[in-house]
Length: 125
Figure 1 (cartoon, helix red, strand yellow):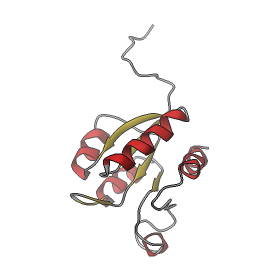
Figure 2: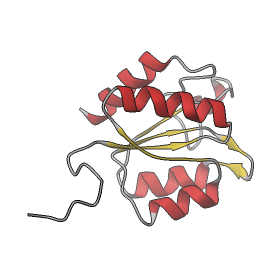
Figure 3: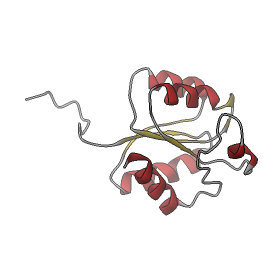
Figure 4: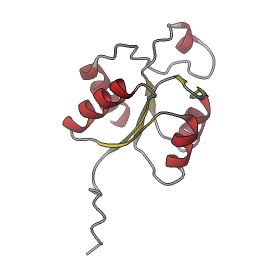
């Protein structure tokens, strides 16, 4: 029998990268109440990259503009690992119409939590 490290080995892990603490807590609460395990939340690119070198999420929710820059390095690493993600950003539609984030769902802010859960489930199916 494997040792109990406090983590449910069957739980679906969702990385949350959001630098506004109250929004991060709201996203975390919605994910946990829907049965997901939350990695983070983390509020910086540096913390997200450090976490990704220790843990492998199944999916992620990313804010685009963090206190230390754009979340692009995190998104690049997630893509290289085959981890799908959604954005929860106040930035407009032009964000996902061209460039690196083209075709990625932007849930916007304020984020509709039931829609977020539905999008994550869709990504994981």
